[in-house]
Amino acid sequence: MPSNVAPAPGTGTSSASGAEAVVPAEAVTPLIRGIAVLRRLTDADGVSSLSGLERSTGLARSTVDRITATLARRGYVRLDGRDAVLAPRLMELGNAYLAALRLPRLLDAHADALADELDESVSLAVGDQDGIRFIHQATRRRAMSLSFRIGDLLPAERTAPGPLFATEWGDREWARWHERRAADPEDRGFPAVPARSRPIEYGEDDRNDEKDRIGANRTNPTSRKNGKDLTVGKDLTVGKDLTVGKSLAADRPEEPGAGRSARRLPTLGDDFEQRTAEAREAGWALDDQLIEPGLVALSMPVREAGRIACVVSVVSHTSRHTAADLRDTLLPRLREAVAAMERELREAQHAESATPTPRATAAPSGLAVWTGASKQELGREFIESLARGLTVITAFGEGRAELNLTEVAQATGLARATARRALITLEHLGYVTAHDRVFRLTPRVLGLGFPPLSRTSLAEIAAPHLTELSQRLHDSVSLAVLTGDEIQYTGRVSTSRVMSVHITIGTRLPAYPTALGRVMLADLPEPPLTELLPLTPRTITDPARLKAVLDRVREEGYALVDEELEVGLRSVAVPVRERGGRVVAAVNVAMHSSRRTPEECVAEVLPELRAAVGRIEEDLWVTGRFRRVPRT
Image (cartoon, rainbow, N blue to C red; front, side, top):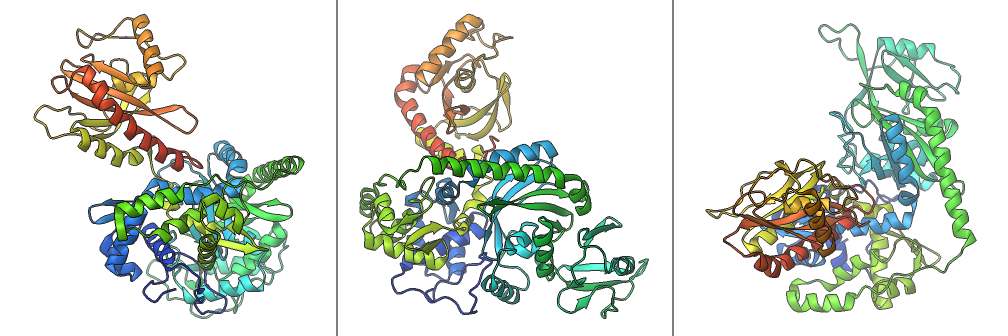
């Protein structure tokens, strides 16, 4: 990597030799630098000042400005004053990996059903060298709930899935793990987890309990004691030189009021090799508060063609389950869920084998036209090689998990030489692997913005578009969702006029006399049209007449309401649709009736409103491809 690009944190990996990998001569330096900026923004939870990016990457400010301008042109970041903010469209890179993987499409519904049945959080994870990454989260909403996001990278030794993935490691993978542990003693390369320095502590009662378990049957490797789940190994050792039951040094002095002395054992994860051996024998693994106090998890591997495809985990809190409770209570049901998932994978494989199709490639992306226009608009601020390199990632997807160089070039419209250099760079950075001249994306692609963006709500997606629309029209703009027979405002940008519409986020209004409500009611097979009260002399209160109005709204795709909610208030609204076409929200422009006539609203406001909603829907469709986007 160039000397002015500092190695980005959060990889959780290192080379087996301990030396930084040599950058190939044909690598694309702007692509390396651009990815470094995206990773810094990801580690900063999606937003950073441009000067902060300059400091964290070691790049010159002019280089940061050019990179962010190119990413903004691509739609991957949004420039907000002096800040760069990750934009939803960046998720198309992670979506390419998830689509190529197939697992979310095939297994997400099983994980969601298991979470609903158990009323516990359920996750799917894949291995990423000596770490794990989540590819799906079905999270329960509680005061104490799981905060991990799709794409988050965790050290394997501090998770329940980690030992299961490690059962398939060879000498090279173990060497990488040992080196990383030595180089990063606090797990600072994993921003999603707390530091590793918290010790494992046992007291005298636990020590005596361990002595009693020496020689215990390996088929029952865990035992509960005082609410703790203490796992013992084959030789009952923890780490390299601490044998359970033996006299150990470094007992700490007894604290005032303490009923027993405590001793400090090795830091979290030092017993990973032991836990891996146990997971290999048992076929499941536990996380008993290895990531942070209170978090417990039970995991099992989901296999395809004899190899681990992913690991499914049930995650809880010690206020609901101890680790032992989780194992004893939920393991049988988890086994059933895993069997169903493996059956789903077998059936999918059988269907794919029964109807073989040639490897698909995407239609040419029109990249040449777009880059030409971008270069003309931005001049030297636009970095063409960065834009081209990132486009290579999007060549992969469903039915395109493995592509050769020719197929990548065809899918992107790039010259073979250009595609080859981009693939060499991405392979060097760990985002693709190559085998027999065929390339595949790796889970590391999820580290390019997916974690912070995977929790984005519809209101957050819409916010910049609402602001832009309000500034363009100089009128108030709102986003709302339908709750029963009412609308609830979830996003709003107001103007500073003397006469303006003043409504706050969270406000609820009846749906029938509002433009926002009517475009959402029109999408329902049986809209609730009861209790139609006259709010103004112009309010429609006849159900048959209102139904006819909703039919027209459904046909025309917009609603215009003139002084039916309040005298002097005029509003036009357009529905917001998800990928499947269902209306999930609506956006309106509201104004005093003296500002524009109804005809002017249709001629001047409606086209701008539809264009803004189109941009919202584009972001929503990218964001919601592999997750449910919260409406509020």
